[in-house]
Image (cartoon, rainbow over all chains, first blue to last red; front, side):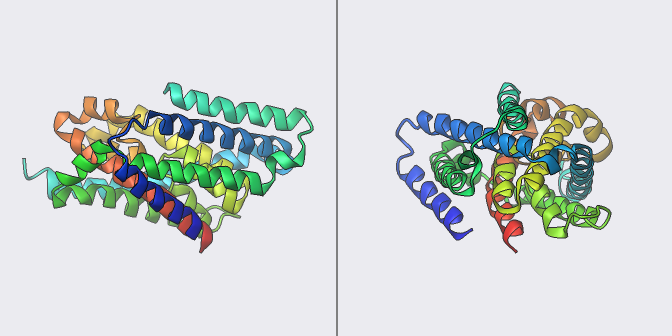
Amino acid sequence: MGIVIGLMVGGIILGYLFRERNLKIIHKLINYAIFLLLFLLGITVGANGDIMNNLDTIGYDALFITLAAVTGSVLCAWGVYRFFFATSK
Amino acid sequence: MKGSIIIVSFFIAGVLLGRFVDIPAILTAEAPTLYVLYILMFLVGISIGSDKKALQALKQQNLKIVLVPLATVIGTLIGSALISFALSGRSITDCLAVGSGFGYYSLSSIFITQYKGAELGTIALVSNIMRELLALLAAPLLVRYFGKLAPISVGGATTADTTLPIITKFCGKEFVVISIVHGITVDLSVPFLVTFFCTI
């Protein structure tokens, strides 16, 4: 965890220092890295019988976590809206 | 949307390949993926640091605006923690890690795979794609019943880019800056929160 955060913070500082340069290539490289990693994740998933045989459970779990997470954030956002944003207009 | 389809295609191509072809184990071993992940994090850092839009948006923040990403994060974490009691076999930290993706499915699923394995990584991928889709599809309903911050909150980490057009349409122009600041802040929190919940 420390390495990951350290690399990211190092990147932020470097990015800030070189912010006037053209850094389009960075976004391209990020995309390639994401494509590669998700492709590899796909291979791992496809080759893993346990996961492939339980896709329905995985789907339901994902759906329930999403709905719970979204409900929580909607309720909090609703409160913030009513108390801090709706009246001030 | 095009970007999402490309990303999902890579994942599905991988699944099919892994399912039907014998892949040498070195390809999916932990070490190489870990190094690519390190490179990715470094690059993500550079893109955040060099983002002038983010810097400007942060400068013109007034304190009230901070409440919006805060509501998103707190609400999401409470919801994810509570649902863990209803799901057998998913621990509270598992659910918190998945929830902490806030719709940023590519990065969060990669992280979670690294720390918790491919099964939870896949759940994170599917769950966070669902979150983004929900923000895109339910925005008008959310505005009507829960106010103009609701679609922003559901959009999570995506409200500075992919879901910004739809939010602008249904919440109005005066919520564009809020949406961008929200997206950038939540986006930034993803790697920290996900690794935190994966490692405690």
